Length: 172
Image 1 (cartoon, rainbow, N blue to C red):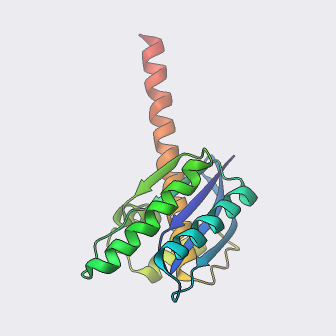
Image 2 (cartoon, helix red, strand yellow; image 1 turned 135 degrees about the horizontal axis):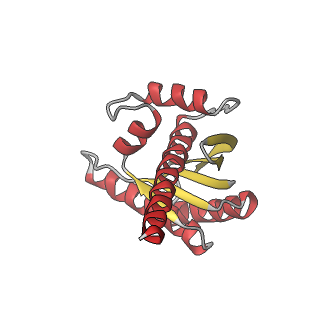
């Protein structure tokens, strides 16, 4: 069993979701969101985000983490702030010694729904279907769980490829 922490970075709200993956079986453990005070300075908000993530990682004890890659907005200032938050989201698990994988939004949608053009509603519906019992009170949490599911699927495929490669090398 592997505990995977999915993270959907944002300066205003960062979604998180923890799943357990055993082979092809996935189980919802917890999900939520970390909100920062919009009236605070950017450095203060980044500090809040880091402290909350560090506490969450300590409490949930994930084995691996997965983060959604940033897309570029039309507003450069918003993109820059999202990049700051994403840096903290990548750093927190790394500082805790937890491997971090990154996935593009398109890859997440393909892994969860089967098409990169899926809507947010379709992703949320499939997350609920794949993780019975998940409440996901926020869209950010659903997105984070989708990232965790994507990582579970990708790591399972990579593991099978590695096993086949190792079997082929030992037979030679």
